[in-house]
Image 1 (cartoon, rainbow, N blue to C red):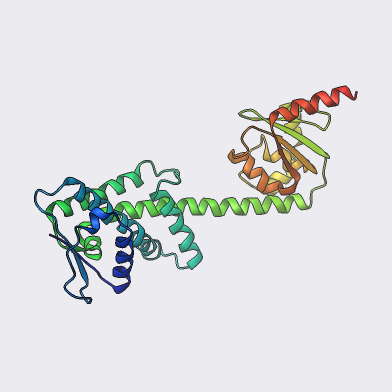
Image 2 (cartoon, one colour; image 1 turned 180 degrees about the horizontal axis):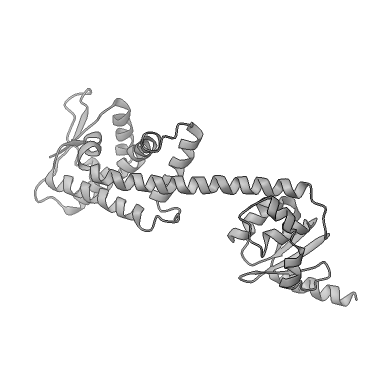
Length: 287
């Protein structure tokens, strides 16, 4: 028999709700409650019982930890290990850490850490079901998960690094927008064709050479406003401050394109590369 003890009414209520929506094979293994007040639940696991029951229970125990306990523990780590107190910051970092845990995003430096932690916790529940050890999730956290806690602290640290980079990125976008507001446009429009890198064309669809592009960069502006801008794309665009920027690309989700959209906002017009070829032909026909 395997028994799970609850540390709070809230935890028990959440467990019961999830149990009601669980697979029948799990519900059938539940031992009848002795009374309505008992703060535990037991599962009948016979020595030679079908392996499917054990596997389903392992999955359920792991899922409950992930959905109910993990984010709470991550928030504790953010507040108590990394000393963040602002609720919005804690919420944002916790969300980023959970996305990493669930495999929705991959941040720099994470490598296989989320997968490694999931496997270790899953292995712990496999041992518990196999040994039929009575437990509470809090006792697991305090004792048998001590070594795993270090990996979770590292995972949260990666989420915090990414959060700080995101904050720097937002400040960078805000700074560039401020610079654009006071810049006099040097061109009415410019056309950018993306093919692994950007190729610049003027309003007459003539290619702007890399040398001429570099010459457009306002060195004084860049010197007075140190920024992590790339000299190939953002720097010349900020210096030229065109009223319209046509970008021709097959995939507008490329990071640099999304950055340009955030900086130049309504000045950006996205189109397929075929549109550029058509506009070049039309321009040639009118000459």
